[in-house]
Amino acid sequence: MIDKSAHSLTEALSQIKDGSTIMIGGFGTAGQPAELIDGLIELGTQDLVIVNNNAGNGDYGLAKLLKTGAVRKIICSFPRQS
Image (tube, rainbow, N blue to C red; front, side, top):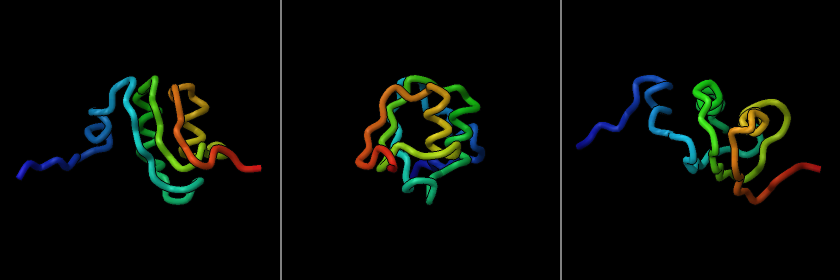
């Protein structure tokens, strides 16, 4: 069996290139992989397509990534809160 586990955040994110499509779990800030999202921001990955059930809110998680300008497109079913 092939071992696909990553031993560091950098190693886990190294396969995500500019232009990648990424599915991110969670709803709002609940359950989002904040460390992984922060890692994407630190690596400077650009032109991303994000698939999530919302577009984030505040300054945390997915919303933080969107504010960096790294996301080209977001595909979601719940784009914003009123």
